[in-house]
Structures are given as structure tokens and as C-alpha cells.
Image (tube, rainbow, N blue to C red; front, side):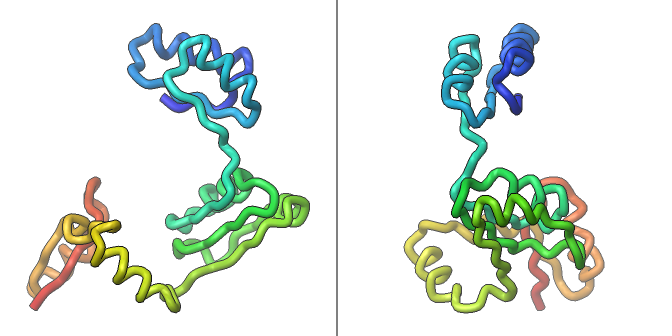
Length: 157
């Protein structure tokens, strides 16, 4: 269970989750003292929701907006996922925190680094292919992403 907020309601919710059998209760709060209190009252782990960088790979508007709000001052936001043509951005947060917001398309200049990571085993790729289809089953391949657990589909000759 993930609980956002380690105030009184969050701490009570964490205790209740454990009472109802949750094996893992993670509480997120930006205040270190509140995270410590949550652990004292039974949270199995806590985390600071603020991040130095956020990379959105979903393209989903709610994910982009909430991710931006989680970045610390002078942090970086990278938009990778392709989503809506236009997304309303939280401009005051971007300006006040002096965030760097950039996009990535076609991964310009990333191939040498990607090849190195794959060659050295730091990134494992082969098992990401969860579907293999021949040309007679292209329609099935195009719909494979509707299957939970599908990651990457390959169409081969």
C-alpha cells in the first residue's frame, strides 16, 4: 500500500492498513520528521516524494502534471512519452522552482550510450520482447499492447 501524506490521517491509515493485513505500507511525505513518525507507527518504508529529476515515459497528462510537481527546485523534467498534442503545464511551479523542462524525440544522440549499456549488461533487452508475430499476424501484434504484462512486440519475416 502506498499512502501519500504522513500527517495524523496518513499515520492512522498506515496503522489500519497493517491491521487489515497489508504486508508492505509505504508512506510518502516531504517532511523528514513526519516520515520518521510514520515509521515509528508501523510504516514498513517511507520516502521523500521530491525528486531531482522526473522522466515521463507515459505521455499521460495526469502523470506529466503530477511528476512536474514532484521535482525539487532546479530539477529537470524530461518528456519522453507521446501523449496528448497539448498539455496544460503548471507554469508557476516550473518558474518558481526554476525547473528545466525538455523533450526527447527519436532519441537523438543516445544510440552510443544505449549500445554500451546493452553490451555491458547494465540494461537487459532480450526478455522485454513478450510477443513475436509473423507477417500473417500483424493485426494481433498491433493489439498485443492491450494484454496486461505485454512489453514489446516484434514482427518478423
